[in-house]
Length: 189
Image 1 (cartoon, rainbow, N blue to C red):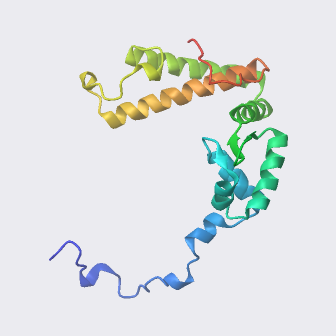
Image 2 (image 1 turned 45 degrees about the horizontal axis):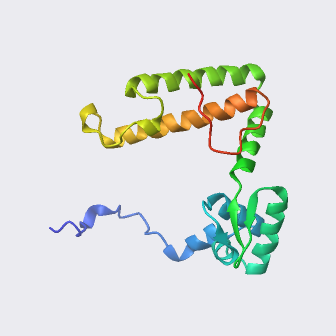
């Protein structure tokens, strides 16, 4: 028997096969919903200056509609307009960090913030000790001398980097300050 062959008893005799004709088009699920939501989804995913036409295509809307939303998003500070021909837009990371800090402040009390920050700093200290390094960027992913599988090492370093970002956001919320507009700051544990 070949691996692609199926046996006769693979399906229960009383079981009806699925009617794939009744299933919706998967692309319709991804592209459905209000244009504003689709535009926000696209804006959150762009990592470099992107043309309006490309954003419109990704959001499944016409270029003029995309341009209107992008201008509105730019006025709100969610994106930055890069002038030129063609005009391009990029996500404003500072806005999104500020928004996240505000959400954290709304959700947690000062005491909860301090507790969460303390736990996060403790976890960061454990990673620093485990890898004998100050940050995840200082650790080689492929260093075979550690006896840790590459996948396990990658997962640990990713979690460490996430903890660093979490600590920066929690600390900014605790201090009742907006995080800096640049890259995520380091918390010394």
